[in-house]
Length: 134
Image (cartoon, rainbow, N blue to C red; front, side, top):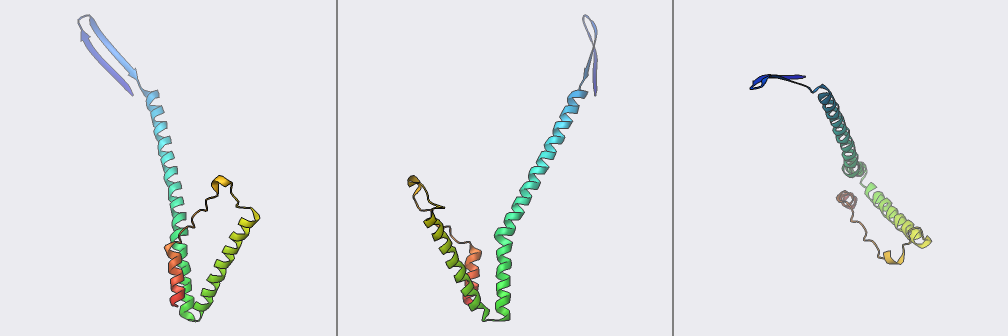
């Protein structure tokens, strides 16, 4: 890119010539780098969002669908599913109790406040309701 300007003054003619090629080249490289960086960030965010959506939404719905299909084939499966859920909950509680007794999750005194249990997700509540209804 050449910028030229000619003009006349009271003292004579003048000529200005500026070469911006190097500046434009570096600007082009930085803009390409910025574009690539934005593409990588958007792709990463998209993959993380997709993974979370699959984990939190699609997998529980597929589990519910499978349970409904099992109950549809044999209505007595609902009792078996309820028993399995109850056994799994007991197993989880027993494992948590063992961890606290063995000291794996023992906390210091200033952190002795017992954390609140997380509320179950709506899909878990729906799964249990489907089993109870079935």
